[in-house]
Image (cartoon, rainbow, N blue to C red):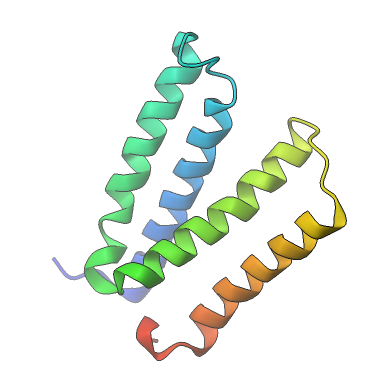
Length: 115
């Protein structure tokens, strides 16, 4: 079944959100000794990879992975800052800005994305 461009990006966004939820729970698993966070982590990653399998059918694998991992890094850092009160120094903020810039450049300027 063909996937529309809007659906492709919605599935990619959902995969990113599932990955961020899974990674947030991973911080609370205590080496997978706590059942609920461990289940959230495993199920969240499974859902994320399943959702990721749809955009990879339409967009180049490297582009999908760059957007998924880049956006995931930025969002999990935001969650860690807001929820877990982890602080960021200036180099970390600059690095995250560069990741965001890279994702924007890929999506706005790359012909590989196939607008």
